[in-house]
Image 1 (cartoon, chains in turn yellow, orange):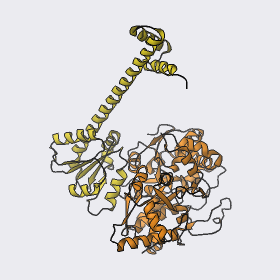
Image 2 (cartoon, chains in turn purple, orange):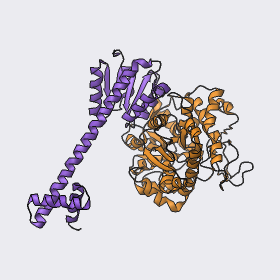
Image 3 (cartoon, rainbow over the protein chains, first blue to last red):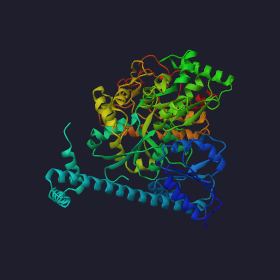
Image 4 (cartoon, rainbow over the protein chains, first blue to last red):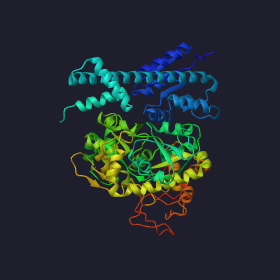
Length: 195
Length: 406
């Protein structure tokens, strides 16, 4: 059963990732989720929300800022970094791999938080996969653009058709055991007028 | 995770990670048969967590952070050790142009003694109070850092209460220059190249260097988990030797250009080569448009036993943690703090080499005007050192020292 009474705060500069996690938490029955993107007035927000659990992405350099707030502020319940318990070493590592840091208010029972942490880790991983796919797609697009440009250069220089230019590119790639995009890149570089 | 001789070491892009990077890039690790992957991190909290879960075997760390981890302040306890230091000094306090103008009106001058600068700042703060203006805000990089303690030491010795008269906030180093330029903070205490970068964009003035506050003060260390060190004594000894030799290499002026080019790479610090070269050569510009000042021993990577992990340094951190309410005093905590720094492992690793490390684990921190040697240690030279206010830290009398601040 989800423990819907817990107040959750999510600090993430990445809008997409924050949305993915927020949706996941709400689907799992956690209605009390606050998302914060910038660090300005963060302490004020924390005081308002009084979260039981705080998540922050590990790419965020402001993690150290957050930890200091817990150190010095008397108005915040002191949350502590969750990466600790020997019995949780595995989950802790999973969280670090996924790229998320978690803080829980001191004294909160571990069982109440476990499912939330699991869900957060899986959503962060899902986001990482999405991002990897996006990176790959972007790279493919870039490579296709290179090939198009190289084809254009060959068509002009050798007065050949588009199909012939493509065939030449492929042949060169196979001969030199290179990727098509690398051959295209070489052609573009070679065709660049000398300064 | 370490497998055979492969180690993963984390670092934060700051000038004093230079020794680690040189150890890898200049072949000192390889000489010891170590293959090291360096991983750049964005926060000290990440460094701590990755050490904790075993992603890192060792890391570039703030000295007090290793003590805080062993004591379990702010997060559950993780016994850590510091078996070698990564240099001494190198920090400075930079203030915004407008604060400097106010301080100047009260007698502060470029390059002046911290006593004069502190007095000027105290007067500015008193004036602000009278005018009911909000308190000044100073940035530093981490609650358990020498920057925090040095800044607090200077403020308190100047009659300024760091918890009441000013706001102290943590700002990650890469955001410091923007923060002071945009007026979010009125000053900060950080290592290089951040002070120099703030001066270069005309956003601030270097008003005090830590060398003037506490000469040859401790700074970063190589930190690792105590249980890791216990399981891998041989690897650790190799690591200590490689870093020791790299520190000597880094200190040679003829290597500074090469080292600066290396550190300038985006995968390391990613700051302009020329800025880094100047910092490595201990050249500072206090304000834009003024000439470069050479400050010998502003940052020291090898000389004066700069890599030796003095147990007395760990005790001083403990004294400041108690002083500023980060931890309640107890003999157990003091013992745990002291045991985090491991001069014994340093000596052991350098046994059967031509290196002669200090024979004692402790040294008294006092102001001296002349070079001196510890008893029986003619081979080492110690420069003038100690605190700017003339206070003496006697590592055998830590409790008295803490009480003296009350």
